[in-house]
Structure formats: C-alpha cells, structure tokens
Image 1 (cartoon, one colour):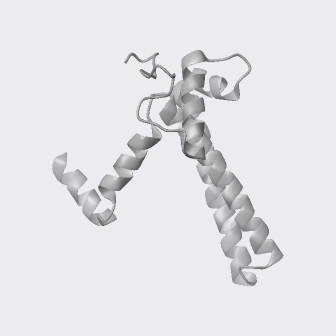
Image 2 (spheres, rainbow, N blue to C red):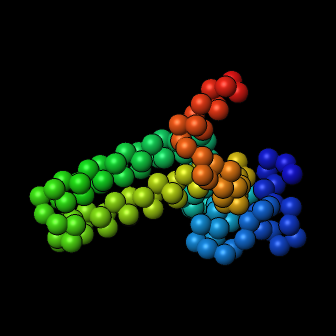
Length: 141
C-alpha cells in the first residue's frame, strides 16, 4: 500500500476497518477524503495543511475540552450535577470532545491509521496499570 493509496480492498474500504459504528464511518470518510482531496472539503483543507495544521486543531480542541470540563466542575461545585447549568456545561464538554475526536481522526486517518488499529492498541494496554506501561516504555528506550 502506498502513501497515497489508503485502501487495498476492492470496495475502497480502508484496510482493517468495518463500517459498524460512527467511529468507523468517520474514519472511512477521512480515508476517502485523504485519498481524493475533494475541493471545498474542510477535511481536505486540514490534510492539505499537513501535520502543523492538523496538530494545531487537535491542540486547540483539546484545550477547549479541558476548559469545558473546568466549567462543568465549577457548575457541579456550586449546584448539583443535574442543575440546568451543569447539564448545559456537560453537553458543551461532550460537544467539544466530538471536535477533538474529529480532528484527531483527521490527523491519524491522513496517515492511513484505522479504528481497528486504535482498538488493538487499547486492547493491548487493557488491564495494565498506566504507571506500569510508562515503566515498560522507559525500559525499552
């Protein structure tokens, strides 16, 4: 598979993915946009800007999720988790998390990464302490 050919399936589906959920469908769309770069597409604009443009959006959107989480934490401290303010802040945090995931998918998908590869990596780590994972990484470098 070349850098420009993100699929090797006759259907045009990215390697190692299924269209079973929204994460797969989004990644499939990103792979298609990365391959065809249609004019007028926001995804195309991001991919064409390279890692600096895609990375800047991931960073920006991640900061917005953290900010929204802070707003939610404040709302919960001053009221209950079911107050109108807390519910609105929670929904805003979810909205911003969707933006982070989209922009992260664009960055990863522009390099042909599949959702199944991400699932495999998370499954590999499942049941392992985060501290243990960090220790193993230090030992292997």
